[in-house]
Length: 403
Image 1 (tube, rainbow, N blue to C red):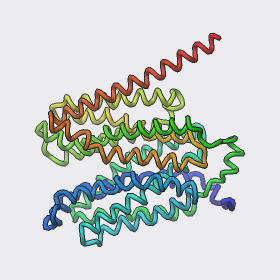
Image 2: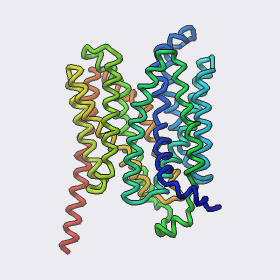
Image 3: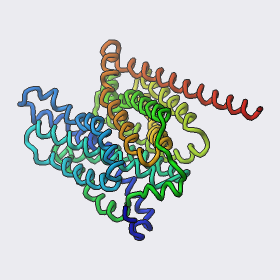
Image 4: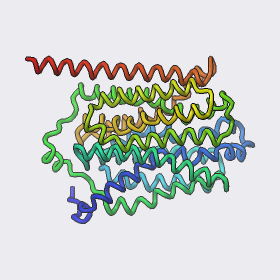
């Protein structure tokens, strides 16, 4: 592997900015099209099963991110993070802006599927670079900023997409051109980490053992379950507001936006929080806060009450993103980090894709509010489980000190 040019290595601040801006692409795929979805459905109303196919335009990328991420993880480990990131970003931009031109809804669904494949490459490689480029407190800080850029990027893209949808639903696809603007920054500031140098600086990093892979599997399972609950915010909030008599779509957008704003704010504090408490303690805290937010949502009878609940609950997602990423990064060597993060990304988006499978039957049987209540109680139970783990470890530590 040829060493990176000195001028590229010197651009550390630009490198951090590039990683963060690239991370903000994570939720552009649904954000760009969501505000114009009703108009899209109206345009394709003449197509058989349009009512079924139109929502798939929104969710198709998530399914293919989940399916493609294990292969993206292998490619990232085999062919390099920087190369996969640059190629994926370019193809992501092409697939995204193609929505401006394709005429058939089936062609649009195909382009959205490819968009998910390329976004899997982007997310896996950029998160692997966070693990490769940074260590210790700096890694915690950048991971927190990465979560903030994901959350606040989602909020920004949704607002802009809403304005563009006023012109025409296709205009929102112009947002994907942002990917092309990031390419010069990638060429100027990113380099392929040297695995031999990393081992020399950071010490020997043996491949994960069976026990470590089991821990990685548990982390991925935790991500899957958590995202089933958390994706209820964008997928069920509008229905909940209608249930309590708030039928204005703008207010639904404000509630979801507040959740993302709260999440982004929480991500900014992650580095400070991680320097003071363990990852398990953070999970206990964020599940408690998330559970409280969901329970308050379930009991809300007004728009104001829902907004308060969303503001509280958003803090949980803001801490969850960096904490779950670092849970994987800290358990893997550079040689297999891409594959582990690919598995995490699959769990993450499969949870989003299957979230309605959990929420809709409960809502149909009782109410959307009851679905939030049940989910909130389960999040509180998860918080209690992690709190028990923290207490148990401290008791073990105290016993060891007594010996």
